[in-house]
Image (cartoon, rainbow, N blue to C red; front, side, top):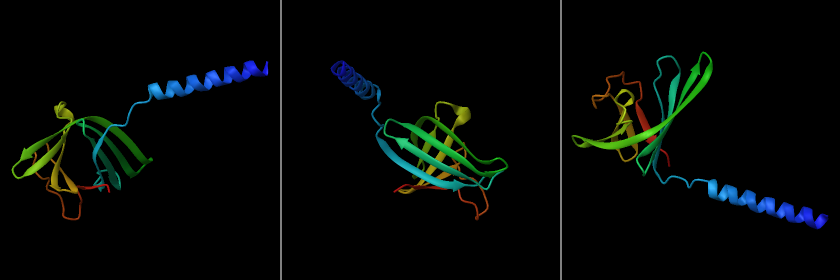
Length: 136
């Protein structure tokens, strides 16, 4: 009886390991990740974390800080592309969904700046920050 229970236990462990090995997805190759706190209209700031993957997909986590109901986090993902705008490159999220496009100007190797749908810089007070910094 003990031998039978032992054999069953070994089979269960082998099946469980096989299930996790065959059903786990390999991690996407990361291209770059940025983060920063952007101005928020109805909150203390918008903590923004943007991850770009080599397969031209992205993951965006936005946390509205200190809202009436506390911090609120929203995530989104989709496709991104790089565009040329004069001397600069624009990282454009959701290029395939015009109503949801989000644009970032590549200021330098370590910084992205939010720009408008027209690809032009947004006119804001100098005390406000529209820049995301590359995660190290």
